[in-house]
Image (tube, rainbow, N blue to C red):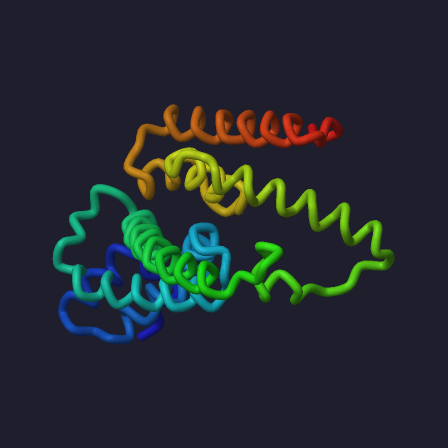
Length: 197
């Protein structure tokens, strides 16, 4: 039987009754959105893929708890977001240990040397410094501001979906995104990047 015109709610009901193909169709429908949410939180394709797989497994295990108060996609994205955030915390602890051990005398990580060359050394240095300044400014944001900004910058989610994932009112999420952008711009200006809009 074709599942092309079947709603998510119908597929959820079939999956609850043991129809593995129905859950497979749900995964196929929402795979890219789940991956993009994980990527927004983690910044690494490999880590995002792992978090997405963990989210699908968690969703399958919790399928009985899905009450339909939000769409299945939103419920699944919320699970994916929390899986990715937990993974980010875990990876952050590991990364801090690795970089603390592997920093050389100049304070640079050996991984900093791995980069694609730019056309000129000057352009590469300017571009690298600006990217580092942006990344640093984003890392310094409060977690609630940072997560809201990363989801918004992905361009993949409505504010309603983001609000559900972040468990905050839509207006609060919109404010967080606006405030995060303002803070990042100000930090860049404070570091001499006056041309940043």
